[in-house]
Length: 565
Image (cartoon, rainbow, N blue to C red; front, side):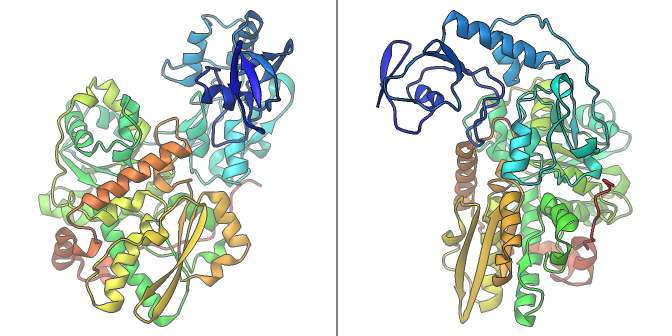
């Protein structure tokens, strides 16, 4: 069909919205509540356009044949300015790099004429909410209800008292929240954000050159960080910035820069052995992966009958911390409490995981500080480090050596593929000729595959996104598999709640491709072939699933009851 936008004739397809047609034809219309992953609801009303002398929201108005649209009339611009002012009336502070600030500048808003006061929600949870910054766009509500299907955030109260909050205003830490952080990832104004728990140690991280107190600082970086950190500094999504990331961390002041990919290799050795043991005993199948803390909390809160099926392996972050505070601390002659382990993670719920009481292998927390990708980006900016101009540097040994299997932990299906590479060799006693298990790759929310290993036919499933996990469990489909990978965030860790904004499906795919490229280019691609892993078992751990391994690298789960009544 033919339509006109600002007097220019353009072609449109039936069912398209005005915004979709305009964007395809490179005609600019500002948006705020709109996000390509979410259903357009026209809440913020800054995408207004004029059609037949009426103002309509372009994000959810379908085009009609011979429709004539104007995107920049005086009436349209004034309405956009007024709507944005009303949205900002609830905001106490706007950072210049957020979507809202850029739009306010574009529309020429210098002063807000309307003001109201709403209390800040409090509570020591990994996520905090500042109602002074909330503009009621509804993105957090949509992602929590429609994608993650936790239904923990909704609009409450009426009129000028409306706010996005938990049912009955329950603090997040006592609610069914899994701390996946998708609400914070989609928030355009940072009203929902990650909370820095130990402020003292965060200040240490920011000022290590000034305040040492006999501390020895080491840092580990999750697999997906290297495929996303560059976006904060204007690089194309999916740009691998591993070397620059290491250089930046050295400039910040860390004594050693290590790779969580090493922890991923360690995790998969333990998990693959656990899987093979359960296969042989035909007990507690399917084995369900355990490296995602949001999924673990979801299971403990909602599906405790599955706890016996979940792998007892700690996550790569926690395995690394346990080894660092025991094996490595002794090796370098530092007391465990003086060895500060900092993690850079794509995930907000890693903060929750690190604070668990059971994560203390040497009498002190295995991981002291967890920073999200966004938090690291802010520290780099604060230190005035010119990230894009940094020279590439290498991780420190021994925990900087890792396999391609560790690299793909950050993508949906990556844990499964890495586990299969090791399990194949354990079950057959043969070295893999082709390490790629492409049948488990993809982006569908629920997918499965049959893997033939000698005379065994293994049924595996991969699920990402809490809404898809709920569907898998409540449909009963989970019972027919031998192995299930569960990841709370869409796309896995590449779409984690602590990743750079914006994060869309297209951006997640680019990050995914980057990690598969890294895997392909690795000299070592199977975790069990990593010489650093072999050495740590020989010198310290003994054997997979052995006494010391179980003590340091495994954990237990318990039924949790959210304290909201």
